[in-house]
Image 1 (cartoon, helix red, strand yellow):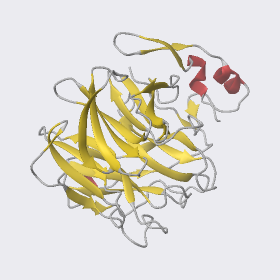
Image 2 (cartoon, rainbow, N blue to C red):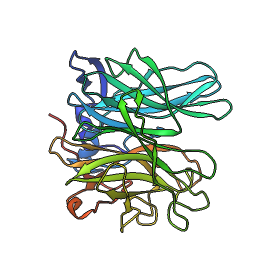
Image 3 (spheres, rainbow, N blue to C red):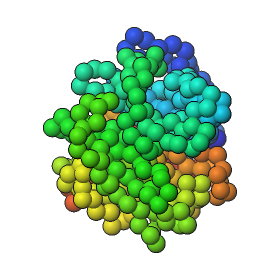
Image 4 (cartoon, helix red, strand yellow):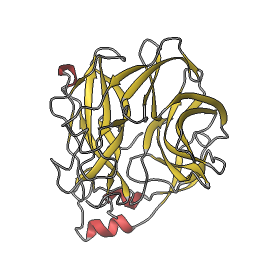
Length: 339
């Protein structure tokens, strides 16, 4: 487990105010590390959290909200929920959205609709390995949640509302011989449009999306300089060569063109980084873009996943380009905390 210089500020929520801002308890571990010269002041090192599954992060009400799946299908799944102001210091996990025995959960994603309500999309997996995408509604990130039903067959849901108000749901079709990313137009947070879903990205052989397991998954869609960037993971989920790339389009349904510098997070370019995947994109207090994602601890297949963060360079978005450098155990400048 690495440490960050900002640990002098503390990282455990003692209480949550009415505006959902975390109240932190001071610690002095980070101060000791700074004084000993372990890491410089104003710097962090990955990993941020030493044990986590596939995370999703969003900014709401001036706070970062992080969720990751937990539990098993046999005993019933749930999500771990954490908060932060700076991406470095996270609250203790709180369990939300518990499922009955026989139903597990995979990656989920929050969405705040124009009606002010909070919606949570997540993949549910039963004992027969059937995978469906559910949506639930709540007035608070921790619930209580009202189940609104199944909106698609698949996993890795990501909702995106465009500037014109159109709502889209991106997800992975996880059936055998499919493994692509699809886009479904929505008439409401839990209501499908009459328009058919469209496959926007199919896995490409002999690229990082292959590696013996041909797949693309974990979609995140962002809009920069009028262009739509689909950030995704590809390749064998448990292997060190699992990596992150992107594709760009002029419309939410594509056609999407893969980035010429793919993959942007990989072991090939950063030998100390293993199996980077499923990034969220958030802004820090200065407006800089950050990737919140996971790496594996070692090169061993299915080694523990860890929470990591790195800058996303979107300065050339108008040219259809994104770039990033994944890091592990290297001192990097801290994100600017949210105000």
